[in-house]
Length: 234
Image 1 (cartoon, rainbow, N blue to C red):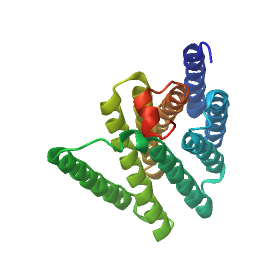
Image 2 (image 1 turned 135 degrees about the vertical axis):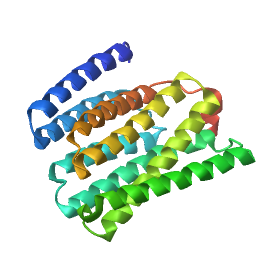
Image 3 (image 1 turned 180 degrees about the horizontal axis):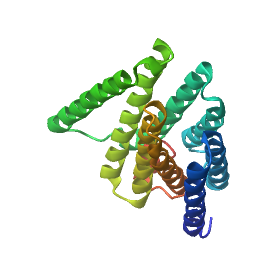
Image 4 (image 1 turned 90 degrees about the vertical axis):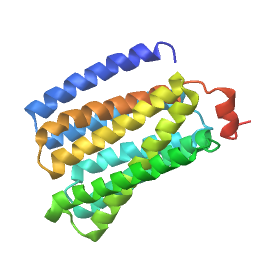
């Protein structure tokens, strides 16, 4: 699509300004509807240039859109669990999409040690966050899904950095920032909703929009031959 970058910048700016206004002036329901509107607009642009040979990218975006609709009834326990499940599946789809690009990446002993260390630290952080929320968890399944949710985010970030480190091009740059946008948004959303720090709704929405914008841009960029072969396209 011609002038995609300009279009995304304009739409991104409009979404950021409108979200700031709605979050400040209205309630949670209005904010959730605006989130759905923004995701739907960007998903429409995403579909125009989406490649059939990248199904996991398409599935991931669809799951994020559906989970946004479910936020309208998030306070219902089973809807909350379903929302967690769909976001986990969305992140697993993004992981599945990017995994072939880095599967042949060799890691030395130090890198493996750092991986295990980072993984361990993040698991401890997940445990502490769950403990902070305390009685706000509906049941053990809610807690279990949050662990899976956190683990999927960790793996997605690690693969995003590995992908960026391996190729160091614009495509890997946009994917990494899509991943970071989603993760920072999720952490901010958690702080705002479960810990009642409402100021975090602003970074939640900012980084979610950044994540979606970068995912749209990534989906419509060309891949070099090495990446295409690693994904099995040729």
